[in-house]
Length: 114
Image (cartoon, rainbow, N blue to C red; front, side):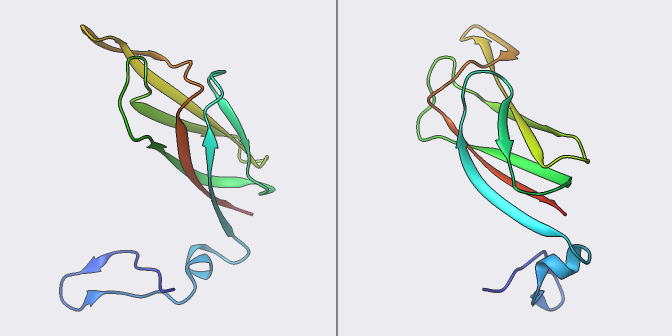
């Protein structure tokens, strides 16, 4: 399956045959989903020896009171562990963010490294 990193206006989509090689020699890309465990952060063992970068997105079908609205990733480059923090609105009347204790929502993640 081709990987399309960006849309080039003059030639259309550009295909990279090996996106891992496009990152750097020896790098790997891992992806998955995790059920938020309410501990904030939810720890994820990626299987990488060292993480260089990561992103996470919410995987929810319905918004509910106390549901996470923002995710943040944190990692130490020397380990392969990824921490996913979830934040929810303080209340329906207050848009300030607070740590979410959700145990019913899922997050998708993508991490790359060695």
